[in-house]
Image (cartoon, rainbow, N blue to C red; front, side, top):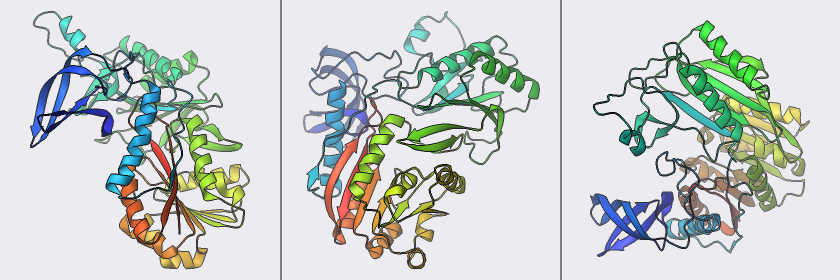
Length: 456
């Protein structure tokens, strides 16, 4: 098995990457791309199945691009993810971790995602079965779909009726909205990604372990009557929705972080708990997409921090302050830094919500805020917790961390490769990689979180 959910074969000294294969498969493969000694291919037929193989439950598997490993037993997925982070640390970072703890698997294997986003399109992707059933000479026009983007095709959307990793409510709401819109397709037009026209653009469903749920619909045309009619129908059909919100997006892209979110019914947020802490999650808020496993992830980070109550802790890339507030009762003071101003406001509000008084949050670019002067004002950190985006940390941030000289650094990462790169710089400056533990928040995908402890 290889990175990005692919498997590897070696053919006459050349490396062949094959998606949706498994170690031990005997396959007939068509080579689709060749670059020097690297080949890419696809399975034409499976002559003999690997003992790691199982039957994927989703009929869209291999087409939608979301799950890479539904065909692999979950125990084998966990073994691969553990090995993936070890290999990255050794091969990319050239770092030996003193002790690896076993990966923490997800109790929920399916329907674990608490946030799912779907796209409306008038150019839905036609599967092989769809094409076989089309009448001769048929030219698809206004072929509506509501689902996920096809990988590599920005204007094509796979129409789905069930996603096996989404919350079940998300599937029910999506199917209802699609059915409602199709009763009047000339009014409830689906978005044309090329022409940038159409009423219905995207939708998002967020759920929580508290039983609350949020539905957000993004419209690209300001038609108050149609908007209100659709939202009223959703409210009537799903009384369990506690936050029904919408946004008018007439930009050339689907992001809405810079747009006003209107609350049609209920509250403009839902509530989630991590242990005994309560968090408000708004339409724009970042929150881990697997709530139960987020508990596990943060527990590992707190354990690695070894807090006694007397430490000054810096939480870098704090987001909405989830980790900062989670560890605050165990620290003297926590400084949270985050690029997105709205996230920092959420972080402050979450502190107030939980009566936490020893957190301090700052918004801005990490490399600009985390300076010697900043540290002189707010105190030298005893512990730094960093949870950067997939790109990892900027070199200036790493240098400032080294100069700040904390006793411990707890590095939480969703990208083993960039974590290994950054850890190599930290170990070259006098830190030792003492302990690491992967946590799986994303069953059936190749993504994995890893928590690593460095000590001076």
